[in-house]
Amino acid sequence: MDFLMRRLTHEEQSKQVLPLLGVCFPAHWKIIAETCCEMPFEEISFGAFDGDLLVGHCGLVPHDILVDGQWYPVAGIASVAVAPTHQKKGIAKRLCDYAARWAAEQGFTLMPLYTEFFRVYESANWQKFPIPETVVAAEPFGCRTAEWQSGAELSRSEKASIVNIYENGENFNGKIRRLMSGKLQSWERIFRESNSFVCNSQMYAAAVDGVLAELYFLPEVTDDEKRNFFLSLGNLPCYLPPTASIKKLMAEYQWQISSADAMHGERPMVRMPQTSNHVSDKLNTLFFALLDKF
Image 1 (tube, rainbow, N blue to C red):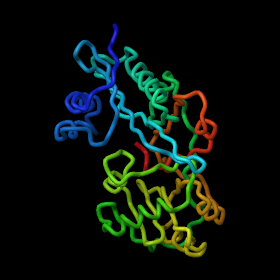
Image 2: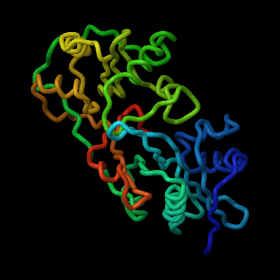
Image 3: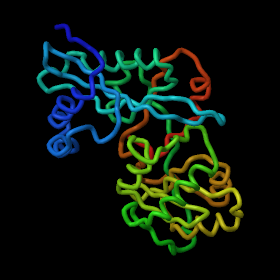
Image 4: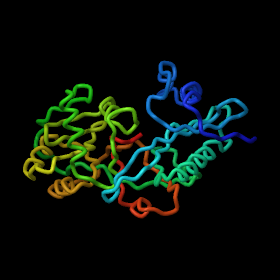
């Protein structure tokens, strides 16, 4: 059976994609489909049609990542769904291929996604990306004195400090340019999710499901101040970006692999829409931060 593949309009996305996602993923999308009149984040949608009926969807989430000090456009794959009546017909693979060709034409350098269904995407030329282990200190250190808050509990000035520290803190390959709102890769979403924060005007920490996921400092913070802040957070499992400060802190203590799975069975997978570019040459140096997982 042949299916028409094409990019969807905003109206089609709102009226047809949300109901499809609600049927395919009721635990997450059913309420959104019933209560929202449009997608909760900006997404470029591609659809598969059986006649006039939308039977498959693949979304692209454009954002920028930092590699060796330069920003590059990437397009994350999200909201892939096939109607239960049309599954096992190769629609998901064909849609992902269609979206990848479009991304290549538009100049995107990388197409990441997060999934536990590796075979589905391996058949469409995505490859599983190796990630570092989540670790915990072999010997408990310090005591937890920091006061953790949810994003909803943060004041406006505390949120502004976190954003400023992130933007002016240390870089690493894979760091995402986070916008304030409107995008999946935005501070609005990060503060809305069930993440926890400790912050002051010069440094902040963020935890995702009890795993320490970010630790950023402004350039003027001393090594002793960094160490004291880190110790105040308690003996949490760590899955941290490889900045110079974090590498130095981690080298001061003995670590062992944690039983915590920071990504809950999912892993990043990547596809290069172009055969060769600077990002592909640096692919093995990229770090996928937990707060930006989609």
